[in-house]
Image (cartoon, rainbow over all chains, first blue to last red; front, top):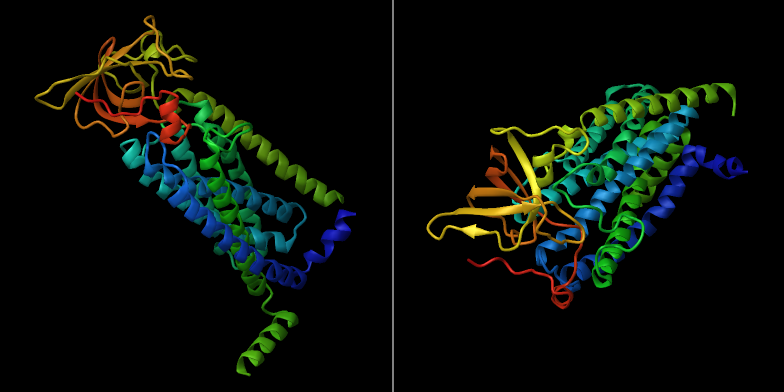
Length: 252
Length: 161
């Protein structure tokens, strides 16, 4: 039943057009949510009683960190279906996700560092949370390197897919590092079951920012996924046709 | 699922489970090294899970709550000393808590205040005193506006000397 529904998307051309259809919508929603969310967070949300306005970096740091792990999970699921069912498109989507995940990991690390200096008193400390997030960045870089290390895309997808799957072990370590070990990093404020450890007027702008960043990630993945499809199918007639019609319309 | 896919799925799943077990065992074996700091009670009783005690002269990190009323500052120099007790949620102190004295010559972080969690990096001088070379503030995961904190009687003023 599900196969019947999913099957057309195993075709690169269908997937290319589908991603092209949802891309502008995700981009518009991302723009709307982020404009409202960031304005709300930076100008109207109350400052923290201890940290004052410095606390506002939370609204970028936490969504970036959560998405860095979310994208990795998505990439690993794509890698698994690529390895087991040998779907070429799954490999292409994993390759599309890796650099975006790496960017968000980097944003989480940099904003965390900028937050740590004034509040904790240090840019960096080798505690379990910070170290495991840094390892996540290296995993992304490794996956990206492997995707580009082979001329044969199927072989590259296999090698990168195995690394991506092995790295999944790091995700629970990042998540629970602050509970399993003594760390300088504090525990979870929002990414937990039950009440968030902040007041509602602080939480709502976070939620809007998070949804905005999530749409931004989806839009960027669609964009890169389309490019990957074109790259991998550049010899196919449908791509050639697409390019020639594009050229014609631009010439007119 | 056809047999070839089934075989690949088995290989991949067992690879992940195997590596997960390996990672779990390695982390378990390293757990005392992954902990960033000792708690004050662990200075006296040894690490909770291994019973390992710090020896005098050892370089270590200590983490705990600054005991209210224990901060003494030299008015001439940057020298400061304070007592640390185990972190406990919600924050509370009792006379019977084991405490460790930390001495430090340097600028304290902005968030340093009584009742605040801190992590100090230094050398255990004698059984219960640590000469710190670095003091870092640790804050918790709770955020709230100043008005609400005022209503709840939360301390948010910097200490004055």
